[in-house]
Image (cartoon, rainbow, N blue to C red; front, side, top):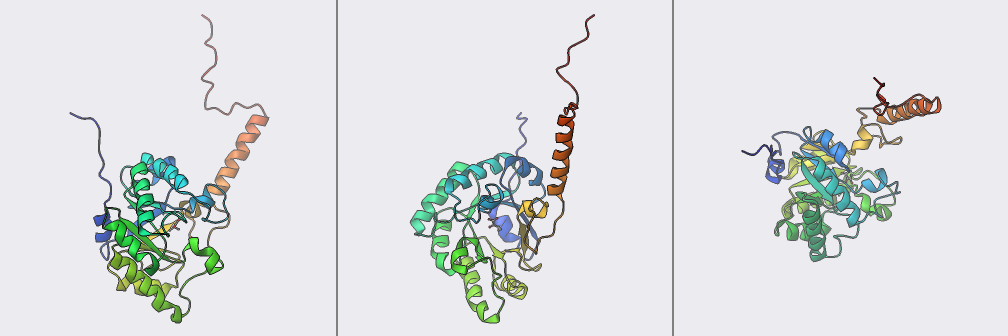
Length: 274
Ligand code: KIV
């Protein structure tokens, strides 16, 4: 009899089936240790390309590479057994053609073992979403504020603040859903528009700075844990790990400088003779 306990991961149909049934709990995650802590409490972990800023100190996500995504995807897969893992397709890895997108996404799936990929864009990448899903790669969409378009948008700006903008964004949401995405992130979007899209499309909407009426929510884990000194305005901080870490390091430094032993016990002390 095998002593190995296998936990079944959340599946794509389970996430899709959550529409209007139960809220989908999502967080970003970039490494094994935190994946272990999150795993039982979330439905989905996104290895987001926000790791460029959070883990690597970049100014935006444009410098993130496929190799970086794969490395962090592997770490999160090793640290988790339950949540569905989605890895972001970084800038430049999927926009050129459905074929290039398939090749790169297949590499992500093969080398990390994750279940699905996420890509930014609405109608303009619908053909690519259909190409991938029909060939076995589940895709999560991402519309509204799409950080990989920061240079074109001229900054991180909430989308849909005037009703004149709504039809194009609604068309993006429909295009992504009809192309076969199993869920779609609505980022930085006017609240009534995000709520309207949630009512209008057949797949779960996952909000970030959008609406409480979305079918699920996602936050960057470091933002909600208080590790980012300048989190986006919409983020509720559930912990203050930044200040806690600073206080702990300060106490450690004081111990070392005072020659107080910082281990729990001196495991290497000599046994007394006799
Ligand atoms: O990269 C990321 O972390 C994301 C989330 C903000 C949705 O795309």
